[in-house]
Image (cartoon, rainbow, N blue to C red; front, side, top):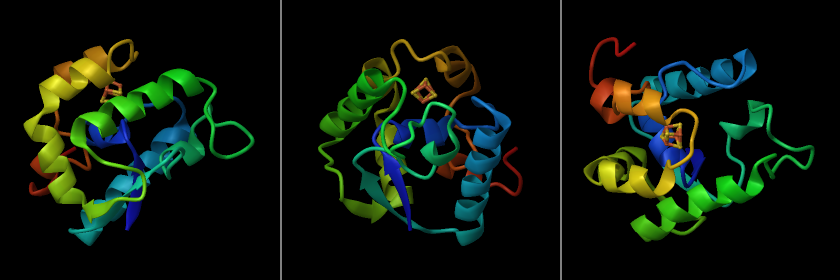
Length: 141
Ligand code: SF4
């Protein structure tokens, strides 16, 4: 099982190897590789920091809060409120991703405004390493 904070249900659909630092991308890619190897995993909705955050340069010494805490929490709440999900909820990662994919445009309009990665995510589409659109392919990179 993995854990994802709210807005990362969108980010994991789009992540293709770019990020804030080498440590961040190495960690994120390893998480994607783990999901791809497992095939089917459950996901728990995290209240704050998740395994993607652990290698982020913006993670604070408390291991939970972010340098940009207010905007990050706003993104999390926007996704979770729209989906009707609460921290602690456990579900199939594929089911969660398909549900988010079905509302991708609407959700990005609420969650991603102001994110520096938005042009790239829009250009590349929802074909990231953890996306069910990509994981069914032999090599989605
Ligand atoms: S635009 Fe930002 S918040 Fe939205 S999916 Fe991309 S990286 Fe995540």
